[in-house]
Image (cartoon, rainbow, N blue to C red):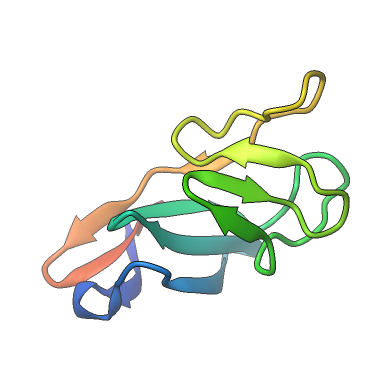
Length: 99
């Protein structure tokens, strides 16, 4: 089942918005004109990532400053779990996820 999150026309570099789907907090970002969807939760201690800073392809958690690659989701510090990246789906003029 497709769950629409946003219309494609609304996406632009720097776009950032949170959603809740089936009780899970999600964060949709557009970085270098590429949409990225991830769980809105730092794998270190669960802090929301909606206010995280973004430098290029690197997302930095606002709570403890841990950094993650948005290309792979992996943490840039040893010993930290990776981000939970979620596959995007497209239907017509909308972007979302398949459940």
